[in-house]
Image (cartoon, one colour):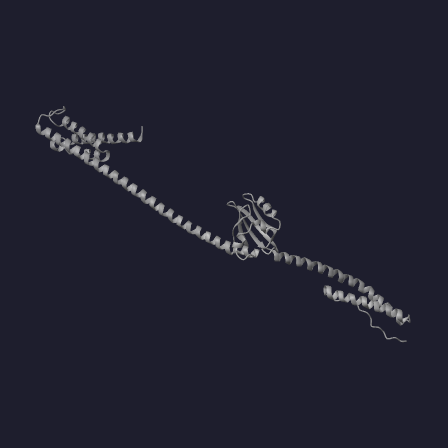
Length: 348
């Protein structure tokens, strides 16, 4: 049984129950009341049936109540029919009042339902308007945040210390930052936009190789590349790239000075190594050389031919002077030799 049928059964069942209660009340009060007062319990039954059930249940209670009054109290009693015209008028009057009460209650219920429906519709519209206002506020806030993000991105793109550019896969540059123009040594961004990304590479195939790697979702990080500036000077850059919205986005950092510093550091390291080797060699040579000089000086004192000894001493001093200069110039290490003894005065 559907909900509509069950509601209909309940309403008409309530009308029958109220009629039965009114009949029972009248039968109980009959010995104590005037017969004219016995109609009074039926009016509340009609009103309650019409109030809770509507026009149909109210009309049913009216008809059942009229039949009960005719059967139980209007002469001839315990039979249907009326002998007195006044009873007929009262009977018709009761039917008219019951019909009017049922109709009025039905209109009242209908108006109440319309009012409830209108109130529900109004609440729904208010809720929808509130939700629409909340959605509009959220959209406005989102639009403001998006605009702010775009502005921050644009500012970041234009002012980033690293050079940023976007290019089509064929190499045509569609957008670049001022920092990128400065990185290439160009006078303005317009000069860069007139270039093709292939022209940045010393070998044009470098751009094709870079693009071939950039599949969707692939990001190239910290790849060292060699480009050329607008004046054809070599340029070492550290590149981060990705594919986005059908374009290639690249962020390039000039590391030319870092390359030069690293090369200078390597040269310095090599020179320092050579100087250390020279100092070590000088130290190794200086010890035996000092011994040779000392022995030559002793031979001269012992009466060896002066000319030969002097030549040997002079050659040894020149070697020792050269070693001293090597240690002072190349490594800055103080000579470790004991030196050449002063030429003794000749006794001859």
